[in-house]
Length: 219
Ligand SMILES: Nc1nc2c(ncn2[C@@H]2O[C@H](COP(=O)(O)OP(=O)(O)O[C@H]3O[C@H](CO)[C@@H](O)[C@H](O)[C@@H]3O)[C@@H](O)[C@H]2O)c(=O)[nH]1
Ligand SMILES: [Mg+2]
Image (cartoon, rainbow, N blue to C red; front, side):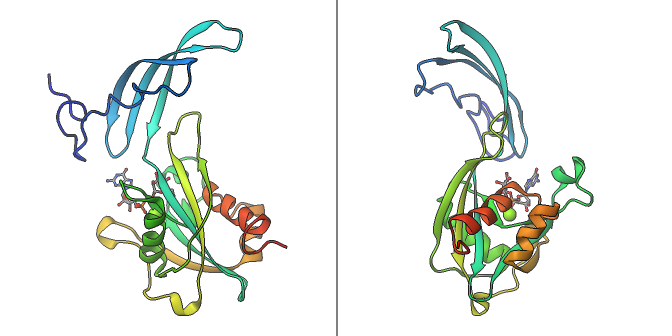
């Protein structure tokens, strides 16, 4: 029997999705026994059966569902002289479905890697979503977004911008259904929005706090 995503291409052209994780060797206390593809839609849901040696030496068998949305890159645009950051505002259904009042999330520019380098994606998303062409990009940190269930790692960057670097209106790719508002905020206001919950996106909170602690707005 042919299964889309396993032996024949799924809607996004992928095959072999049940192979992921079978070749892991980095941890001698973990042996992957079986990978079952539960769903391959836009993202991929797998149920993996693994044997794991606990700290007391006993082996146990467990199942873990993982949600694979691919990795992503994010970029905080900052203007230290003017004391501002450039962010996006867009509708996020997953957040709306889980209690966000209107699903309109304020975020740094970000996008899926789709096989490209993280820095290249960070630059491209700044261009597409915020209309800014950046020169010097600084790597800040990489973070697993929700490691109990999500495989996703987000590579986080920062870059300076000036008003003159805003070469287009941004807004995202209309033909992909993106509809993104460009939001310029004083850095202090962005931090206040983290405090009162108006900014509730993890990568954005982390990059703003990094900027205050270690990055362009430290000291
Ligand atoms: N049909 C369909 N299209 C989708 C879906 N999810 C996303 N898309 C399309 O893919 C585009 C995503 O554009 P990107 O800018 O590359 O991704 P993103 O929405 O910012 O999300 C990426 O970064 C996030 C971190 O901010 C990640 O959380 C996310 O998994 C992804 O990697 C959307 O505009 C939309 O057209 C889906 O479930 N179904
Ligand atoms: Mg995006």
